[in-house]
Each structure stands twice: as C-alpha cells, then as structure tokens.
Length: 184
Image 1 (cartoon, rainbow, N blue to C red):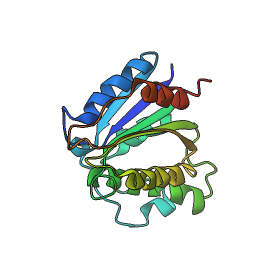
Image 2 (tube, rainbow, N blue to C red):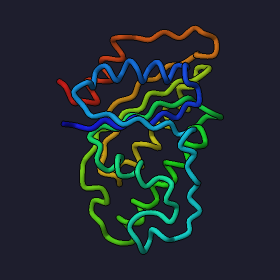
Image 3 (cartoon, one colour):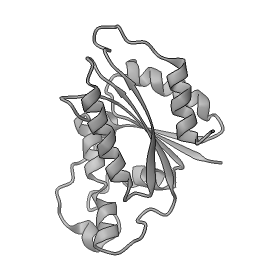
Image 4 (tube, rainbow, N blue to C red):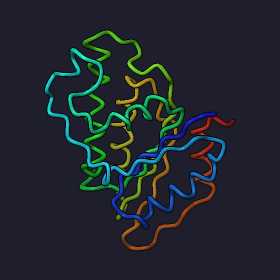
C-alpha cells in the first residue's frame, strides 16, 4: 500500500487548508495516510550544530517519528497559508531541519540521502493575491526536494481567502491530484 504524508502548515482547524486536506484525502483512500499539524508539532529550529554532518539524524529528537514517516512516504503534500510572503514559522522550521539530509548527501556522501522516491504537491492559500509569493514558496520546495529524492510535481494555489472571494475549483483540484499521482 502506498503512503501519503500530509503536512499541514496552518494553525486554523477549520480554515481553507483544513478544507483542502479533506478534499484531497478523498482521492487517496487507497493509501495509508499520516497527517502532521506543524503548529501542534512545534518543531525546534535548526541551529546548525553540525551533528548531522557526522551522524545520521538530528541532535534534536522532536521530529524523529515525523522523519520516519517522511522517508517512507510515496506522496507528500504540503498545505500552507502565506505568512509574510513565505511559509509559517513551524513549517519553515521543518524545511530548515531538512539540513540532516543535505549533510548526509554532501558531507557524508549518501546518494540519495532518502532511498524512497517521492512525488510532492503543495496547496497554498493566501489572504490576497500573492501569486509571486506562492511561486517563490513552490520554488523553495522544488530546490529542497532535488536533494531529497523527490519531485514537486503539483501545485494548487488559492488566492483572496481573507476577502471570502475564493472558490474551490474542482477541475484544478483534479488536475493537482492527477499530477501528484502521475495519472495521464
């Protein structure tokens, strides 16, 4: 059975990201699903302590189970609002903690640092029309996953959520899922 990892970067239990998680999950009923709320997870930031340059893993043990699920996932989907033109702090802390894999690759020679390839998607919701920020956020994930044995292959952007003028586009949602699952 394939594995889906959902990474929720929103603090709102009933917000746009939560609604999108529910919609996307229905297309992955054939997968084992793990869902992490980054605000509840409250990850410690990377402090560049150099532990991962010489050891597998991280000196902070708070994300050990998360990273086990991360490594085992076939699909990873990030759901995130735009905060000050970028990811919210807890999600950014997780992305910074990918350092363990960069060190494994470039300091310890692990090629690839994560054995299982991944297909990655990102759903971005913004209060205004912040398409340039969404593009930058997506580019950041693309760059990260070139080392993490993953491909960011799907994005769904939802602007204008603060004004209540947003709509969920079923065609765009299905396109997102097809790109993620590599369905032609």
